[in-house]
Amino acid sequence: MEITFKEVDYTYQPNTPFEHKALKGVSFHIPKGSFTAIIGHTGSGKSTLIQQFNGLLRPTKGTAKIGEFTLSNEKNNQIKELRKKVGMVFQYPEHQLFEETVKKDILFGPKNFGFKMDEVEKKLPKILEDVGLDESLLERSPFELSGGQMRRTAIAGVMLMEPELLVLDEPTAGLDPYGKRQVMELFSHLHQKRDQTTVLVTHDMEDAFKYADQIMVLEDGKVNLIDHPKALYTKKEHLQKLGLDLPEQFHCMDYIERQLGVTFDEPTLSAETIAGLLSNQLKGGDTQ
Image (cartoon, rainbow, N blue to C red):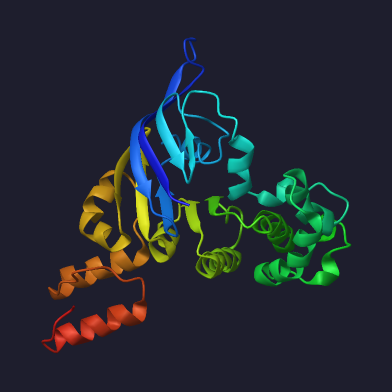
């Protein structure tokens, strides 16, 4: 599912003393099957933007095309059909659990959207395997699970609907480094396996550079830049001026360049690759 925004504005509480324009002439394209990371400071418009992806919000001005669906400021009767195809994983998704059993919670979304439940239940074992949950947990209360299991239960409910677009809003919030790595590897695995379009909203630049095909930077409701991660290495001074943290590997590469006078033409997030490039350079080779 591809996404194309053309000159999209979004204004909260228009024509009131509390009017606030959160998006200002936003235009961009996200290709089908890509993994895009959206970064920016609090208040930059990230949450407002992604809520347009499944029609929770509609543009005040301009158009947002999500797959075959076009959203504008006019009423759209296809919102429910759009939401069948867009999976949203918000911060702390485990807080959305409420059913008596894990199984009922996972099946709630498909049931609510009118999926054929006999077909859905046939897919359940494979989804549990994909997200790393044991079938023995299905009849337990979701509130008896560990924090990690609760998060995987919430994710399973979204993935069971087989979304064409998966939107992740800070999905690793509140997790320790090991838990963050597990969850991000899970989403990376699901993205590659299902060939779906994935959009990640994150403050973690290392995740953005490691997993995304392209990175979009929002600032004050506008797209400041959008490019491939490796291309952004040449724009690292610009990112720093925006107050965005760079991955630790970038700092390491900068230090090596300053101290040894070598030049890296493109970034890498692999310490082994950095070491190999440095060794090659010191031997008089090429860093390419």
